[in-house]
Image 1 (cartoon, rainbow, N blue to C red):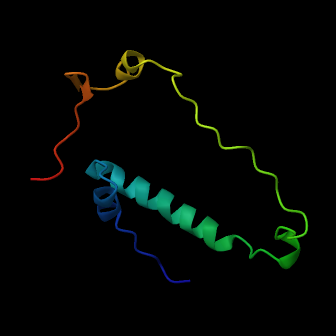
Image 2 (cartoon, helix red, strand yellow):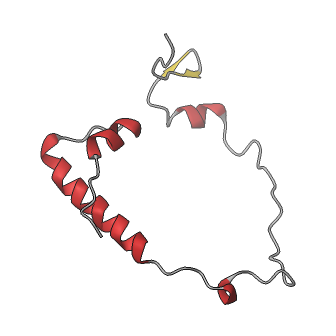
Image 3 (spheres, helix red, strand yellow):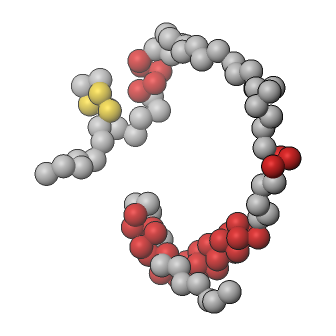
Length: 92
């Protein structure tokens, strides 16, 4: 396997993360370890695949409403104005 080159600055930009220059080498090393671990994972054999004759039973998907008041939810927001969340401008 050839030496892989991972552009941490580009990944951070795509993920909108700020990574200090002195942390780039550590993050690159960690990312290389993660990629190497994933490459070592074995392929799934047929005997490990789900049996179509015994399908899984899923729980009912029921939405909970009125669990929290609007004021309780807004307490967690970093910024609120006129009862609405304030978010950074994304479109000019």
